[in-house]
Image (cartoon, rainbow, N blue to C red):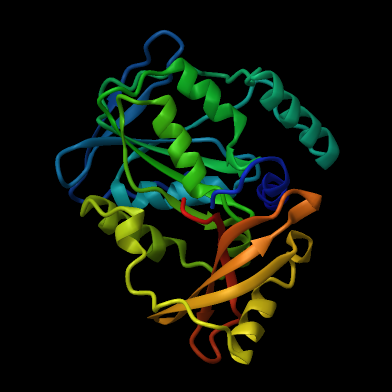
Length: 304
């Protein structure tokens, strides 16, 4: 379902493009219980190695985002708070699409079992969600409307079908202008579900970049100059996008970055679901030989 939501975003908004109870506290983490206040649940206060106190707040519809939230919890020693709907989304695709579309059009955000949280003890909030219609899922609007994150560091993370990381993080920053919204993390949900993403490694690397104060612009470095595509580039593109034919992606030029494999950044024209033509950047990862097939990582509106 998350995959479908992420892809439908391409037809309804301009495209701009993470579970369990297995908490593992590091030896460097001191934790204590924070009593419930009003309707707020009791949660643990986790002190991260640098002395700050952090919490992971997330909404997960299918469990994929929860699995990524757990990785953040293991690596940061943070407590987790899952946002749960009073009236969960339907299990059928059409009904869920109709409801979420209506919520967005009417700005009638869904009720949460616990909307107002006692976050006073935390100075860092990791905020996780699936992408729906090009940005964070509607329950996050309810959370943001109910909680003031002023003065806190906010670290967005998401799961998506094909993109929405940058757009959703930018909207968090717009809705919380007095918070310090930093670098965001995102992962395609099918990479999590199929096990082709090493989420623990990715999150660990992301945390290192985030703590170093890196930005998206700084992380783009290392790609070659754009060039005309070769037959090999075309074959990689075709293999990675074979399940996304309805996006009508037409690659124009490509740049590459050598990692443990090869990252490709294709500049493409896209005309999805009969919408207006847009210029997008399609990121694809090609593993080392005999280590898997090329994977579509994200589709982002150019310049975002």
